[in-house]
Image 1 (cartoon, rainbow, N blue to C red):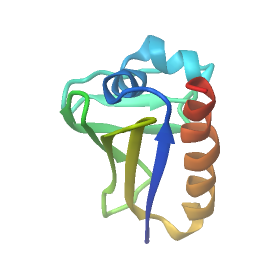
Image 2: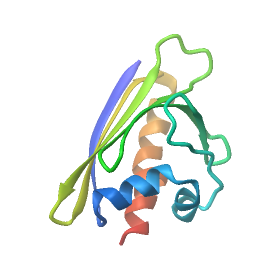
Image 3: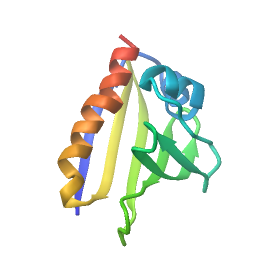
Image 4: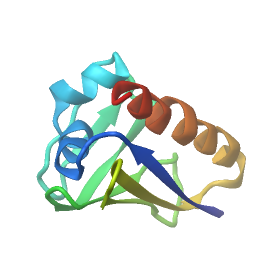
Length: 125
């Protein structure tokens, strides 16, 4: 198991980025795919036609999102924490993803940098 932590800079205020990460219609705007998402803790979500699935754990509107991502029959929960910090250019996003299976690590990092936050950076540029 591996952990990943990185900061991303997005050209929009934290409240707007939060909505882009939590509202299905807005998620579809930057991913190009339908999304299943609810802001109810304990609800399950699905992004990119089921490529990313998991359970929502915690929401702090405009500030923080905590999710569990599913990787097959993994015993230890893989937890994603996204913290939004105000920044003079918009939002500094602090991403922490723990307990990533070794065999999935490179694909997950590439996905965070490219499809996920790379798409958001393009969306806000």
